[in-house]
Every structure is written in structure tokens, then in C-alpha cells.
Image 1 (cartoon, helix red, strand yellow):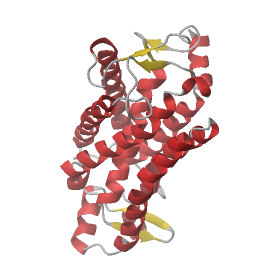
Image 2 (cartoon, one colour):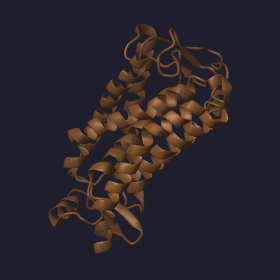
Image 3 (cartoon, helix red, strand yellow):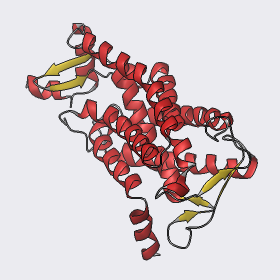
Image 4 (cartoon, helix red, strand yellow):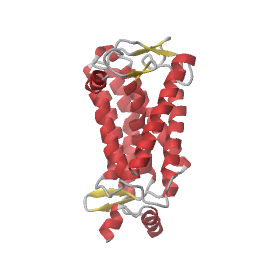
Length: 283
């Protein structure tokens, strides 16, 4: 078992690097307990969604896992462990990217700080935008993962019938949207708990507001690099075309919003999150 656990990490280092980055960002943001509660809940939801789909075709459509690595990496009831784990950091980076888009922005020195409030973090806008951002990540990830036999992922799954989008069926993206809505909603609900107290582990981390969006971009770039490496240039180009305008809009709108917040927005942020870097600077 120890050998299998070790090989699971060694075979999928990119997944565990992304996961460790998630932990390093998420704990200062929402605290130890909420981070690990969300990790467990999100993994379970993702696993159930995948197990359901390979058994019933819902929510992602009919696909199947090819059991060629279960003797040397961890599989759980017919599903590779790393696959469901990926949903955890994909949800968080999508949600925090949504918060970056929705929140007023302030600068202190070279740091850029999102003036998050409870209302923004728990809003329907963060829910919808976070879910769509996660789904659009899968639009980039799934066509590359389906070519796993051409890179170090390996051919671990396939669809019973090839889909329209580089072999991926539209039902897969519909399933990702519905699952992402559940995952972001669960993260919001966990974040609501115990708000009268400062969760243990939260601290003012410089550049924390940028790290979630940067993790989101890192996942994109990783998949584009792999696509380019295996010669799938059309997958790279369509992915770049899909994201160029949204990224440009986010950057331009962010620049226009910097330090243009209202005083009441700042005070609400400081009241809701006393551990904000802005409070530390003020002190």
C-alpha cells in the first residue's frame, strides 16, 4: 500500500503540485478547518459524479476508465484517485478567480488586494461565474487528457462514442457545469460556517488575491504546453482563442477598478475580514 501511495504521487506529480499550491493559498484564505472540510467534501462529490457517470451515463455521459495502472497507483472503486482530487483545486481556483473579477480592488505598495466581503463571497454571481470558469477549464483539459496515450498521463479513459469537440461529447461539459455548480455552492456553504469567529489558520498573505487566478492560468498553460508537445496545435489554438478575449477583458477591467472603491466597500471588507492585509497595514 505504501508503494502504491508513493507511486500515485510519482506518476502524477503535476496533480499533487497543483494540489499543494491550492493548500498553500486556501488555508490563509479560509482557514485550516474549512480548507480540509472542503477538500473532503469536494473529493467525495467528484468521486460520486464520476462513479455515477461510468455506471449510468449521468452527469458526464457514457465513458469508461481503462484499468492499466491500478496495480501501481491508487484507484478507488474503479476511479483513479488523482482524477477526483483534481476537482478540489479546480473548483477553488475558479471560485477565487470569480472573486477577483467581482470584487473591488486596492493596492498597497506592489500588492493587489481584493476587497472581498461576505456578500460577494456568498453571492449567486460568484456561484455562477465560478462554475462557468471551472467548466471552461475542462473545455481545455478534457481534449488533452483524452490524448493521454501520447504523453505521461496514459490512456486511462475513453468515451463509448466520440464526441464533437476533439472527441469529447457536449454532455461532458454539461455535466461539468452541473457538478461545478454543486462544488462551488458547497465551498460557499462551508465558508459561511463559524463566521462569527476568525477561523484558525487565516493570515494576511501578500499577493494572496492574485494566487488563485494565477493557479487557474497555470492549469491552462500546463494543458496548452502538453497539447503543443504532442502536436495538437488546433487544440492549442482553439483554447487560446477561447480565453484571449476573457483574459484581456479581466485585465483591462481590473486596471480600471484599482483604487476606485467606495469608502463603504472598504469598511465592509475590513469589518467582514479583520485579518485583511489592509487592516494589518492600517495598524
